[in-house]
Length: 219
Image 1 (cartoon, rainbow, N blue to C red):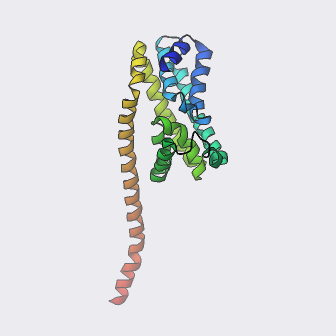
Image 2: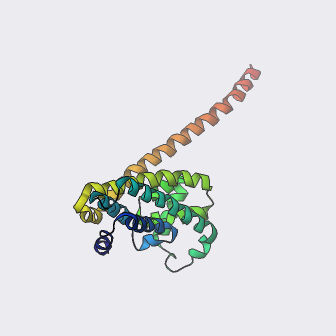
C-alpha cells in the first residue's frame, strides 16, 4: 500500500502535491481515512518531495500542520454531533482503537489529544471521541494545535532527512512512534502528577488558617 501511494504521489509537483498530501492528512480524522492510509505516510512523502525540490519545505510544513489541526477539529465536531450513531457502525463497533482512544481520554483528559496524535488508530479516532466526551473545544484546540505542530514538523522533517530512503523509514516508523509515545506519555504522567500535587498543596494551605484559628481559640 505504502509503495503504491509513494510511487503515485512522488510524481507530483507544487500545488498538486500540497493538495494531495494535505487532503490525506486532513481526512485521517475528519473522514476516518486513517483506517486506510496513516497520516504520517503523507507527511513523510511531503518531506521526501521537499528533499527532491518538487515542493517548498516551509510550505509543505505549513500545509501538513494546518491540515492536521483542521482535520482533527472537524473530527471533533463530527464526534460531538454524530458520535453515538458512528459508534454503532460495524467498522467502529468493538474496535480496539476506540477502546484505546477512550482510555486515553479518560486517563489524561486534554493531554490525551496530544498523545493520541502519535498513535495510528488513535490519531483517527481520538478527535471524534473527544467531541463525544463533551470536552470543551477551547481545551481540545490547544492540545490539538500543539500536537499538530509537533507531529507535522517531526514527520515532514524525517521524510526530508531520509531522502530516497523514506520508504524504509516509513516501514519502521511504528517503532519510532512507540518510542515517541513512551517519552510523551511519561512527560504527561509527570505533568498530571505534579499538577495534582500542586492543587492538593493549594487546597491544604487554604484549609490551614481555620485550623490555626481553632487552635488559638482552644488556648
